Length: 166
Image 1 (cartoon, helix red, strand yellow):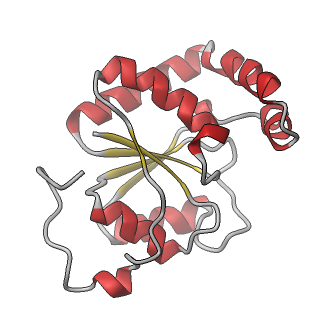
Image 2 (cartoon, helix red, strand yellow; image 1 turned 30 degrees about the vertical axis):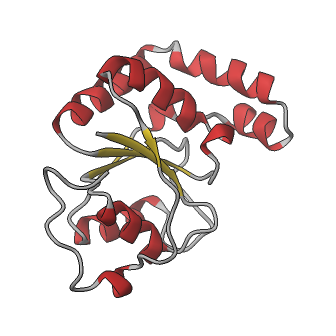
Image 3 (cartoon, one colour; image 1 turned 180 degrees about the horizontal axis):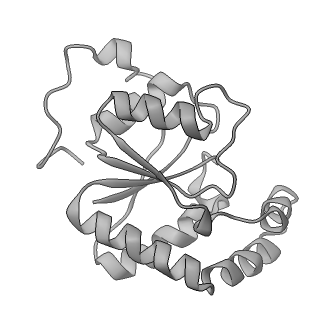
């Protein structure tokens, strides 16, 4: 299973609760820089919080959107954003990272992570579209739910391993 999610505007508990609810086993962070001004979403803090909830974490910077692409997207120049990111995907490092994600997604429920709430405005959609053709099943684009924070789910989550609801 392969999903994507953005944490824009989300609280860490709601973010992790959403991942647990749908049975995500591994988060693949595809941000160029795994830093965030939002508490709980920088690399170390996020990794530790996810692992405490039984969710793995890896950062694949090789699939990150470079500053030029991020600036283009922020200014609304999505044609430049796509051209910039297409160049990233042509690198050997990106190809290896894509293969790594495809292999993981064949074994477990994987979720690509980036910042933007709307996957249409984020490079994770481009990555997901490519991977969808490789792993041969539909990618889910998740939204962070505010009604599933860890505190609200305490005692309600069952084992969401194999056969978890989609």
